[in-house]
Length: 324
Image (tube, rainbow, N blue to C red; front, side, top):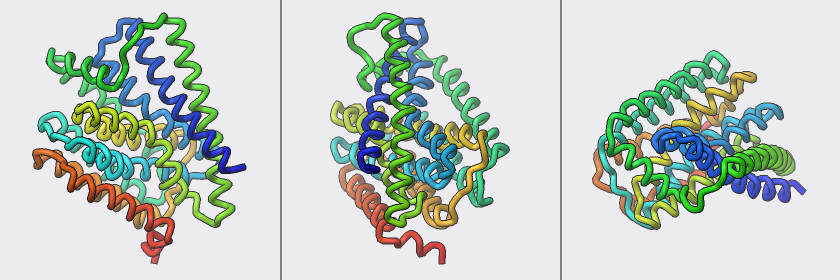
């Protein structure tokens, strides 16, 4: 039964996430919201809705290991799995400039998350500064990009590259799609968390491990699909930007919201092993985007092998050795 819950939950998350973002984009366009604002907020953060609701549901269900593991595992998957798959399809050209700033922002947010996590819990007092940093970063991105006509044109092109174009819909239809997406994501997150908790308990696997692997991979599927399509269409900059934006929102947005409803205990195994994998993968990725011309198929293969090794460490119990 728990496998049916997980499969159904993942399906609803995928469907709901797509409907939510598409409905929001269509509604925003109907209301005359500039493409740059849509790209920086609705698309960038809307794709993080599955992770947000799953972590909230896990927190309310008394499973902080899934809530924390979902974020850490998603960020690791975004870099090693999604970048690896994208670059394997089409080498990613590292355009320097804004990506360097955003990459440093991602690295800084990751380091802050690790430091706060070492206290053993993420409290509401930890969450508020992270949420404030996210708001400031979004405002800065909008103000700095809004001065450049090229940035506005690029935002419109990115929306098209992501597939957010087609037959215009009415405001009421866009609102209905948005509402249906919210319902699907909420219901899917509940089913996924309940199923994942049951699986963890039946096999004696820690909830953190389930969150870091099964749940994290499931909630990262929308970003994976977007990045693969973008890479296939030779829009490598979109794939790169999605990963950076998603990782920033996962930490500053989700960890800036979920702990406001109650402190999240951070499992010691995550602190001693997974935090370092996340920080190391982020540092390597940021370094490559800053100093390399492109991420080619050789490095993509290394990223993918690294992700497989990470998953193996969990399911063969190697990650637990960090406790010793």
